[in-house]
Length: 100
Image 1 (cartoon, one colour):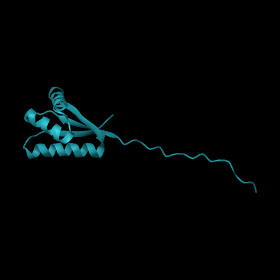
Image 2 (tube, one colour):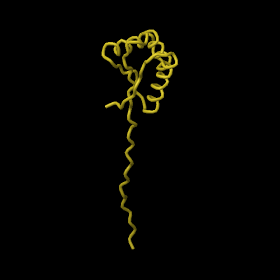
Image 3 (tube, one colour):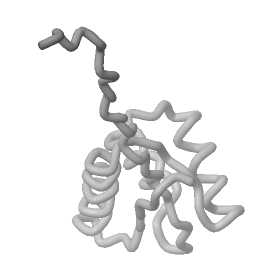
């Protein structure tokens, strides 16, 4: 009986990085600019300047990417921002979608 000393190749399971999701700000013609910037600063920790740029991009293009994060973080932040707007009676909308 010979000892089998040949090494069997071990396969490492491939760990896929979690899909990232974009949080998108949708333009609307009712929410005041100051309120949009306040939400971006409060929820997404943006500076005044960054908030203004994101808000103006959404204003001109219809949407703007606010942040890219793991799905649960993106959805939580988007919901937090929408809830703030609803509490203030504004139709401000944030959505999440998978990053390509």
